[in-house]
Image 1 (tube, helix red, strand yellow):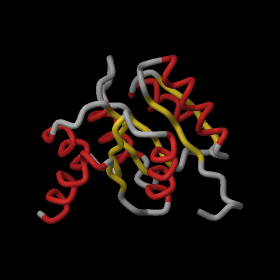
Image 2 (tube, one colour; image 1 turned 135 degrees about the vertical axis):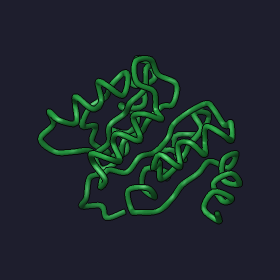
Image 3 (cartoon, one colour; image 1 turned 90 degrees about the horizontal axis):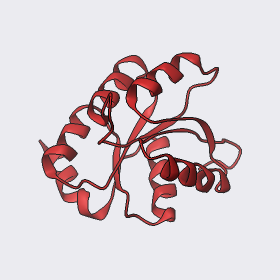
Length: 145
């Protein structure tokens, strides 16, 4: 990562305490939080209001109002240059595949350590793909087909 370039992130997750803690953690690593949202609908509203779009949206899957699948699909349709990193406790193959089909560039499990989240954001921002160890085999098969 170029140290002169600050990566702008948005965190979309329905758990307030988790969002707050992760945003503080990300900022401690030099990332800039553009906004945080409790569901996809709020996130899409925020995307229209912000002066500068986030580089990476970290999207939970299970949220009320508008879940991560719909959110990822909508973000990719309206903001194709914004990278999506799925962020979930869920390692179910059909959900992982659905997030990838909807355009997620990576998928990290919420049980990952902070350094892994940082690395995932940097890899996705740089145009790569990143998957937690428990997800990588599913992603590998997806990209082979």
